[in-house]
Image (cartoon, rainbow, N blue to C red; front, side):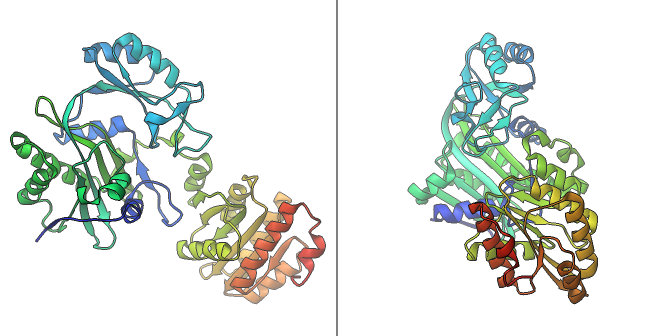
Amino acid sequence: MYKLARSRPSAAALRAAKQNTAARSSALQQKRFLSIHEYLSANLLKTYGIGVPKGEVARTAAEAEKIAKNIGGDDMVIKAQVLAGGRGKGTFDNGLKGGVRVIYSSTEAKMFADQMIGHKLVTKQTGAAGRLCNAVYICERKFARREFYLAILMDRQSQAPVIIASSQGGMDIETVAKESPEAIITTNVDIHKGVTDDIARNIATELGFSEQCIEDAKSTIQKLYKVFMEKDATQIEINPLSETSDHQVLAMDAKLTFDDNAEFRQKEVFSWRDRTQEDADEVKAAESGLNFIKLDGDIGCLVNGAGLAMATMDIIKLNGGSPANFLDVGGGATPQAIKQAFDLITSDPKVTAIFVNIFGGIVRCDAIAQGLISVVQSMNLRTPIVARLQGTNMELAAKLINESGLKIFSIEDLQSAAEKSVQFSKVVKMGKQTSGFLLNGVG
């Protein structure tokens, strides 16, 4: 049986549910999720027979002008293809306001494309650096009689898909959940049965589609679920899903994300990945088989295992510090992996101390220590390093580190190691001479 009910989730709970399943990089996830540009999402939906506004992507101003002429009419929208939310309220590095603009001619399409392509768009999600716009999506502007929100997610609590829908489309869903929780509809889906006609029809009716659009909306919801299942999606978010003035059901805007673990069977989808939209260091780490995500702190973390990495970040925070990154080198923790990890960590100028927390099971602790010593010597590192190596030959590893003469400090206890790394970071930030402090009670 399916469950269809009006629920009243808090904005925080809904945000957490989305974050657990979304494509955004999260230090709580060992794998990242793939996000694709809006025009690619629209193209994919079209192959499933889902209605979307007529549109094409342009990579030059001349292409934009040509596409606008082909679309015809005098009412269109040009959208900067940047993988970040808040594009409409963003600002380009050349001063242009808004990454989503209404245009009324092919001349305007050319003009705005010229100001968008090749420039960085700064939004609430990109940070001050912004993200480069390499293309624009030009589509017809359709007028909606009604706008709805619809998303399909994997719900970790029920371990099954869930459909989240709202009669208040075109708005930020967290705002709707906070201000009008009664407008949120959640539907748990039995993964063995899928979205039946009754489920989809009930959702369409509850949302408020007009009677003549109910069957079209039902079909659209079922097709969206088919995309979700067949393409190993982690999230399909349509905002808004509209009933137009001429009674069409159209996905006006689509955000699709996919499970990285399914890359081996979703070759086409993953060929659409735009690495220019990703952090260069994180791309480099992924190519080296490292799970690396930048954070805002100043204590670099080098850990093997996602769970241990999260625990390491937690204990740093508990001791008043702030982790600079999530970095999981995996089970091997070879000298080569350690070298690549240190390259990533030390490329961040904010890092004032490094906490190495590795369990030596597959690779012995003494081998890890030797690799660590070799890397520090070759890189001539001056940043204080706290090393907690647990497992096979841990005593020999501590001996090697303590006798190396380098600024590496072997500490066995997790709490003591975290506390010391925070102390080192604070001293370095204060610009004090650290030699006497570092050796006091540590060496």
